[in-house]
Length: 279
Image (cartoon, rainbow, N blue to C red):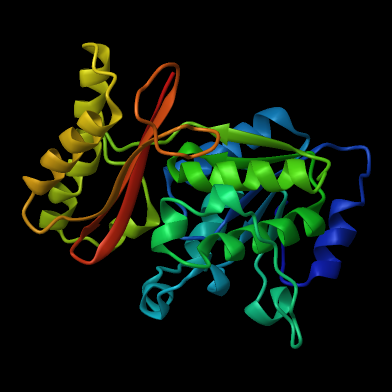
């Protein structure tokens, strides 16, 4: 039986009914797709109990219109989670997470500054704060995040290490559509034509991957390759392309061991991100 609660006290009471059971938690903003469900399945494999949070976190949106347009379908989400055997779902209202007088935020400094942090001021302060609260409410043994949000995973891992959270962060592979498009709740906002154009993100990453396989090590050449692929797509607007160290997220000049290729592109005004990890 899946239990769904809004209040923190209810989540805590239910979570601690069986104190010796291991718990995995999957933080989400809802409008679930196969990417989210893959995290849920991994959590189910590795824990006795699985919890999921569904909360569209207002403080991680620097664009009010983006928050307003974020898709929501709670009943559908709960149906999907019930079918996956989830034990506990937290669906708080904003005033439960951020009650009147709320004034405490978590800020991860260096890892949050480049890439998404540069283009979405305050975004990772919002992410780190809500994730810290989710960890505090559920007190899980493990928490599951997708590689698609690579910088988010780095920021959360840094926060967990720096603040001595007693849990393991598990980063799972990006789940893609058959044509390679990374699954995202934002894809639903694209027209059929926009959906085709969105393939340029993965095409750009694949082009750079192939160049690396052929021996290219100059990071700026790889960035230029990715830019060229995006620029050939009508209406695609580049926010950034990056070839960075996967741990520090600092831009590389040369690839010697591993690298994170990542990019953010606007298609029909919808901001899409994707990345691949080069080992």
